[in-house]
Length: 140
Image (cartoon, rainbow, N blue to C red; front, side, top):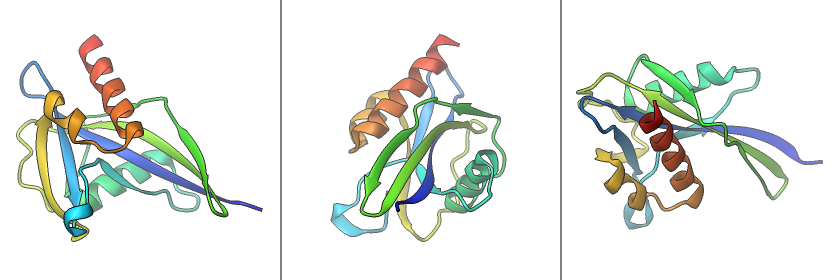
């Protein structure tokens, strides 16, 4: 029997002008690491909203969102005996958020406009998620 594992990916963004900027994190794994969003596991019995806030706080030091956006695109796959379900969200923070407190798992961060953020993401699921978020933000 497969073990069910729930995970989240959170695309943190800020918007001071007409275009949003997206927070990208690079893990501290040397040359083979790649840029991506905040991500982590959802604890047993933990609600999605609290997992989103906890992961963003733990990984970046950002306390409260101005808004949380469900991107409505869960992904599911099997990895060995684990059945993984990944939930993807947008997390709006205050403009000018630059002094982050990164978790030691990460080597660096950067804020990037969509044109720089999209090609920086290695995983196709991450590209699809940031495209959906960017489209939702521009439609509002």
